[in-house]
Image 1: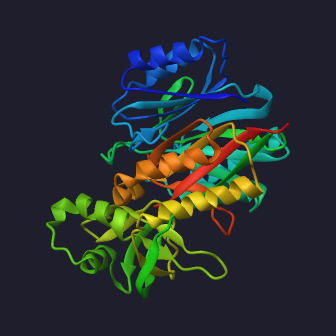
Image 2: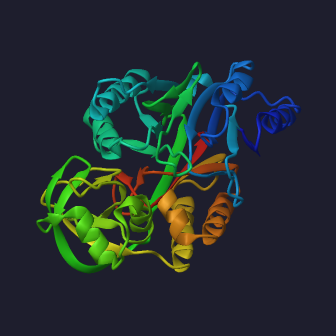
Length: 380
């Protein structure tokens, strides 16, 4: 496997960078594209389709191939991975439930490879990312390898897209299914948010919608806890601040807490729509954002993966929460660069509305406010 990364702010710049990348005889079979909703997805795909390149694409809330964060730009990874080692799948949501689609993808993985792994891009605003993981687990089992992210839209919160060859505006799932007997697929998901305050109870919820916390309207609890006095017409600003500074940690027995951050607030019923499921009866604590020590923690965890699981990498993909970007600010560029330097391999990533990856002391799960990294290499 060989990988190259390119970036640009226009189709002209991408075409020039692409032509330069293949000028030495490099013949990619697969492209991972992360781009702003302001970019022309169809034109970018058309450029690659002329060269018969398979595509997994997602819109973003910021994209990068190094520590320089793109603004309304295009980031792309080109790979020359064997067609025998992967399968590209896309499904549009339609009237089907997310969990049913995900189970279908899991079944396709088993039909294709005896040991499949999944890299997923999903529409990101109303999707319950927990259902993606749960559906694939229903088909394969809890030890399945899953990494990915929910698409972004430059934080406009109006419409996210994932796309592939011939399908440029679907709101479903696009998945690379990898043969783990041929490809090493390792990585981790790390957050660093610290719990603070008393334990509270989710007294009414349905799926990823939280109606009440301690029998009080969820939005009211959030606003009171944050100690702010805002016009509710500015609810998007409230949620932006909650997601980046005070996400909820769901407490679990015999497992690390899992973070959930709200994406939307409903002013009428005072509910919160989160990126993943929040079961009724859950015990939660709010969180404080990490300081710069979290970067050292993430790098140390990456070093552990390198030392114990995969010493050499040929490609790296990062899914980092947009709320994490808002919280860390300029430090997020340092995090990206230092993680990349652990393996010193080509890396692409984007800021997402939810992440899938392996918890430090657990299985592959759906997360918020997390940096999820997947590292790839061909088995010798």
